[in-house]
Length: 196
Image (cartoon, rainbow, N blue to C red; front, top):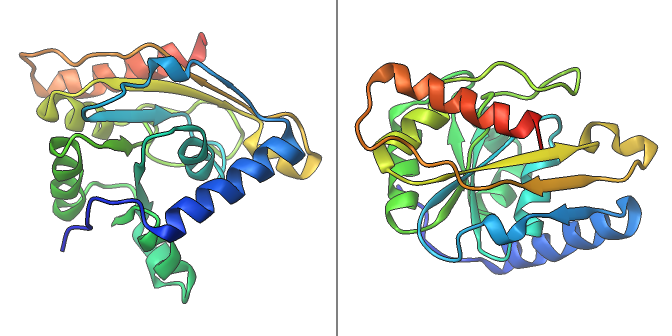
C-alpha cells in the first residue's frame, strides 16, 4: 500500500529536532538550496557516508522529502513505525524491488521529492563509492531532474566536526535513452558531487 502524500506531525517534529541538532552541535552549513525545484518531482541524490544523511537532507529542505530505507529497518520495534511515519518506505538491500520502483514512480508522478543514493549503499570509508544504475533508471523513466548533493563529515559526528551539505545544479535525464544511460547518468551525478 502506498503512503499518503502528506507531512505527518512526527515528520515535522523530527525535522525541527534534527535541524536544531545539526545547527547547534555541528554548525551545519547549507549551500545551494536555490537549486532545489520549488515544485514538481525531482530526485535528491547525495553521496552516502552515514545513517544521518537522510535526516540531514530532510531537515535542510523546505519541501517534504520521501526516502528509501533498507527493509530490515522496518522490522525494528518502534523505530520501524517511526521511519514509516516520516516518509520512508522499504527497499531490499542491494536491489530495487518492484514495490520500491512502483512507489518511487508514484511519489515523483505526484510532484514530490524523492531521496535516492547514487551509490546505492553507505560508504564505509567516507569516500564516494561506485555508481549504481538505480538512480539513473528512475530518473530516466520518470523524466525528472536529479539534484546532486555533497555531504561532508556526517561520518565523523562523534568528533563534532562541522557538517556541510551542498546542493548542486539539476541534472536532467535524456529524453531518449537506453539501459546503458542509467549507469551513465548515475556516474554523472557522482562526478558532479566530487567536484562540488
